[in-house]
Image 1 (spheres, rainbow over the protein chains, first blue to last red):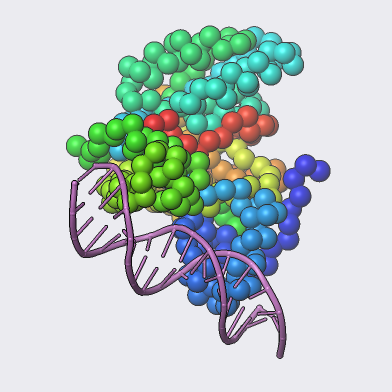
Image 2: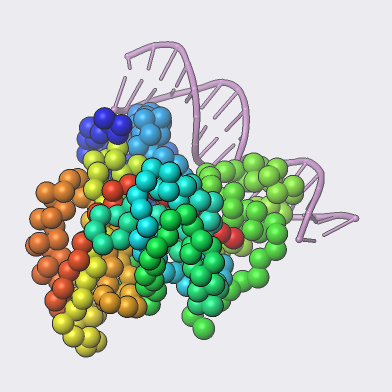
Length: 157
Length: 157
DNA sequence: GGTGAAAGCGAGGACCA
DNA sequence: TGGTCCTCGCTTTCACC
């Protein structure tokens, strides 16, 4: 059981919701939002952090503002599924900063990568070179995001 | 031009990188990392926030710890692509907290949704009811994440 | 869980080079 | 732009109810 599920009460859930919305909320603000005084509120937040439920705090950037106008999904089929090939594939994927996420999928393809790039030309070149040459790659299917309809950083808690 | 790309120098990039890693880094810590004194460092961060490059700060949760063990991608084809149908579809998707992300895609399907759920049963039920009944849905294809090989919150800047 | 308080520090502004 | 104070407020962490 690699992932213990800690039972959360309503106050914990409210704290998690608030911190997902605003990761820089102060203990005072949080205390007000969950109707608790600062001290116990702070103790709860500490516990949520220490138990690993809150894995970190991050600034979120607007990718268009930093010149990453293109986001695409790259689905990949491998030649074979030996432990060596998949391990090598997964290791090399980690090293590509343009790859924001990579999932080992059920279904038709083996992996789906979420990739960002400054423009379509760069994206195509990246797929043609960096991704094409990953270990064991047999088949590639690419879809672009035409519109980011929804993107939330908040899990439903 | 809805998305201005602000030119960033090396120090700005370093600040963005640091804040993506640790959204609660203090100005003092940041100043040290980018070899600047706190005040100009603080001004730069302010500017990155005000210009919208930094769109916010968020706590990141471990989804397994909060009982969301299943993540899947749901690809959807619509019956038709009138403005009314797509607008209705996109509006209703916003209201589903289990849907973390939704992209309008190029290629075979119209949309791809990223969905979380406590377990496979819940996931299947969610797709069968909530997603199936979204406006205009004709075709659904689902893939589960068997393994989250990579997930970063940091854009390459 | 709540209160109160002490100590430290970080944010943010004024001002200069 | 960057650097150096300075000050206020808040965070954090006690001990105790």
